[in-house]
Length: 338
Image (cartoon, rainbow, N blue to C red; front, side, top):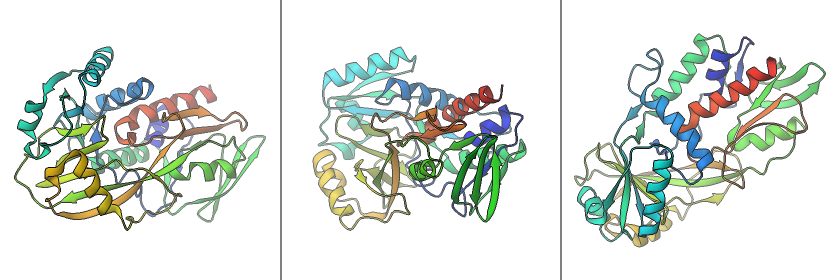
């Protein structure tokens, strides 16, 4: 998203160096594709609201298919106070939202009977993102606007000189006046190569599970995300996609499914959705979500190394916020060159 926005908003040549063989191999390609606008922090919600606007109405030449299936979302809560807080924050952001009682939630999701639930906030403009179409649109748009994109191009050395950076990556040496560190879980490693201020980025492993077919919910049913008892579930290809929102610190790497992942899911379901315990899981995978201590994204210049822009800490909302994050980064770089 940042490379796409930079290519559109600066006259400088933009080069994207990707350490993997293809784009979107980690957080981008392994998430649950949930467009959730109202999240825990107002500062981050401003990004997700802006990003969702783009997902609903991208430029006509951005993608061949819609980026968002507008299923809506149900942010479930355990207490009336939590529901009132959600509704008040939604009004502050101008988000369409309504309150549903617990029986109204269970009418849509019978399998969630037994969930600690007093009701939910319904956000009709949330939905499910077509991650492939979004990622392809960014890549295609960046190339169309002149960006150079390289894969299998992990960074091995960064040197800061008077006129900018010299970067060794993929067997070549690249030179740039500005270096944008959007390396996700590998952000600390790239920052250390640049001798930058150390950011307290923490990659966290999370597991996701896809179930066998179930006839309980239609594919366009709003997904449910329990705010007070972290857990989410949505329809997926005739079955369900769900996560207990587990978080375990994990070094940046390709992430394997933990040996106890299914047992941990069963324990979580026993607490929040006991009727889902008998739905067979057919596939599971793990991914990394990377957080700063305040759980907010950072789009900011390094305090020590001139020309180094940090774009990190997107946590689990990067797909929804991607356009707004890229836009913020591009504006910062444009101001640098002004």
